[in-house]
Amino acid sequence: MVSTLRSSIRTFFYVDAAPVSAREGWRSTLGAFLGLGLTALILYPGTPSNLWLVAPLGATTVLVFLMPHSPASAPWAVIGGYLLAGASSALAIYLIPYPPLRIATAVALCIWLMTRLNCVHPAAGAATLLLTIGSSQLNSHWWSLLGLVEGNMALLLLCALLINTRLLRRPYPYHPSAPTAPTVPVAVHGLVISHADLDAAIRSSDSFLDVQENELLVIYERALQNARARQTGSS
Image (cartoon, rainbow, N blue to C red; front, side, top):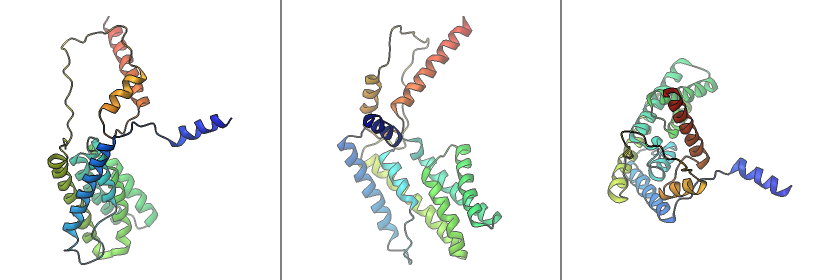
């Protein structure tokens, strides 16, 4: 009974992701420290008010330095996400006077636009929320907040490009090279991918992967089903 309960709790709360090595963890930590620190150092002297860094930038920092290979960390995702955050919040502010409905609409619209333009960036949701809430508190100063948000994003992205490529020697933006495939597909009989094979492949990347082994197994099984269906249809 106790073991079943523990297993249920673990399944519900815990994601069985491959751990990042200590070396890679320190590299990501150093990159985040330098990137956000440099951004703050540049912005701090020229800011007359206490608001000189915005909270969504923390989420962007995690993505571009801990998960630089993720599609959500790509420069287009960061730029497009923040720009759409501004556009969505401005549209919701203009059209919807009731704050709760305005906020929900702005974030939902930002999500929809990001999926359409292939620039999904989670921090953009936080930026949309910040801009939409700030509209009722700042009144005529809303455009200044928008400029601050976009300026924060642009400066951090520039730091990420320089630090990842020059200092940490990481490929950023990340463009995975496709494996060389034969012109004619080769059928390998009796070859089975095991748990150990997938686990070793995931760990060999030594980076935080936002995909679980079970998801890879599902993709693998679906690929096999598609291959069988294609062969059956062509025979």
